[in-house]
Image 1 (spheres, one colour):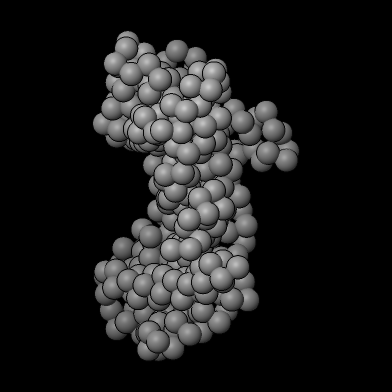
Image 2 (cartoon, helix red, strand yellow):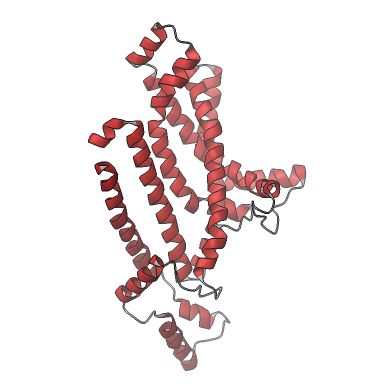
Length: 319
C-alpha cells in the first residue's frame, strides 16, 4: 500500500509539470492565431487590421500574462472545460469526445495485434536459436525496425488500391454502428503500426527468453521431467515478459501521438490528424487539450505498468 501511495502521489506533480510544459512551449511556437484569423484572406496589413488583431487577442485572453492564462486554463480543465476551438468555433471537449475514442480504439487494436504475433515469434526465435526459423524472425524484426512507418503505410495502401481496388472510406463508421465496417476501416492502419512496434517486442522477448532458459530453475524443471512446452511457457516465458510489459506500457502511451502518420495515410479521423491540423492553424485550446490528454494517458499507463510490475515481481515493492 505504501508503494501504491507513493506512485499515486508522484502522479499528480508529474501531470502538473507536463501541463506547465505543454502550455509554455506552445506559447513559444512562432505565429499568432489572431494574425492568422485576420490575414487568412491574404490582404495586406493596415491600421484597421492591427486593431482587429488587438481586439481578437483581448477576446481570446492572449494579452494577459502567461501565468494568468495558465491558472485559468488549468482551473477550467479540471472541470472538463478546455475552452473553444479558435478555428472550428465549438467546444474543445466536443472534439475530444469525437476524436479520442477513435484513436484509443486504433491504439488498442494495434497493441493487441502486435502482441499476438510478436511474443510467439520471439518464443520461436529463442527456442529454435540459430536455425532457419530464428533467422527468418530476425530478418522480419530488423525490417520492421528499418522501414519507416510512412513508407510501409503508403506501400500497403498502394497495394490495396492496385490489387483489390480498396480505398479509405470517406466517412468513419463507429464500432457501435457497425463492428464489421469499423474493423475493415481500422485493420489496415493497425496492421501497419503493429508491424512497426512488434519488431522491438519480438527482439526483446527473444533476448529475455534466451537469458531465462539458462537459469538454474529452468534446468531443474527439465530435470523433473516436465515437457518442453510447459517449461518454456509456464516457467521461462512468465519471467521473461516483465521487461516486455514495461515496454508495452511505454509504447501504449506513445501510440496516441505516434499514429498521426497512419491516420493521415488511411484517412482515420482520430486525434493524430486533428492535432496536426490544430498545430498548423495555431489553435491553442485544441492543441493544449489533445497533448494534455495524451500526457494523461501516457502517465496513467505507466502508473498501471508500475503497479503491475510490482505485482508480478514482489521485489520491486521493497526497493
